Structures are given as C-alpha cells and as structure tokens.
Image (cartoon, rainbow, N blue to C red; front, side):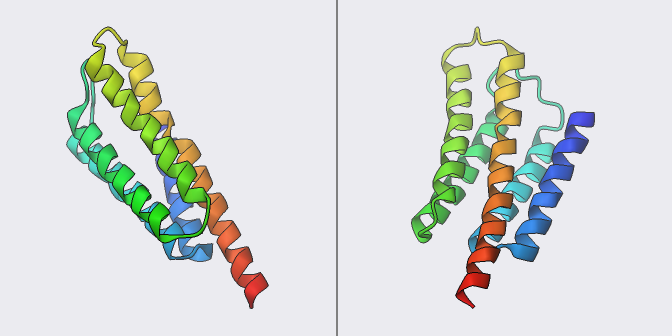
Length: 137
C-alpha cells in the first residue's frame, strides 16, 4: 500500500512541475502518465500478475502511442527516452504472454517500476523547458 502512495506522490509532483515549468509536450506527457495511472487503478485495482494483465497491457500500448506522438512532434531528445522506457514495459507484457513460467513478482516489478524513470525524465524535461524559455527571452 505504501508503494502506491509513494508512486502517486511522485506522479502528482511530476504533474505539478510540468504544469508550472514545462511546455506543452511536458504537460502532455505528465497528463498521459496521470490518466494512465488512474485508468490502471480503476480497471485493475488488484492485479494478480499470474497471467498477462491484458487491461494494463492495453493502457500501456496507448501510453506508448501518446509518447511516440510527442516524439514525432518535438525536436527534444527526452521523448525518445520515455518512449523507449515505455516500450520496455510493453515487452514485459509480451514476454509474460509468450512465457507463462515468468514469475508474477518480476513481471509486476517491471510493469510498476518502469514508471519511475519516465516520471523523473518528465520532471527533468519540464525544468529544462523552463530554462530554455528563460534563455530565449
């Protein structure tokens, strides 16, 4: 339960930083993470991770598409990183689908903790976006 509280704290900090200091793409990425997290909690509040979590997989694919679209629309490099991290999460689902013997714990850890580098990168990008605007002004 503490891990969920910590995650949502980091997520809300990410959204706040993106709103305060980020540009439109940083806000878009933060909103994508927020919406995906809320949807995941709503559709799979207590995942077992014994089999592929199909609902979470679908949400993760939609997040990948959103991050990919950001990558195509901006000149910045950070969207490539968050898209790559999200792709790793997708591959975790695919591996669980292909190899049922993968234990629930490693599958859940990959699916859950892959979000932290993404959130931290969005925070970094929002701070960098603010500095770029300050320099340009």
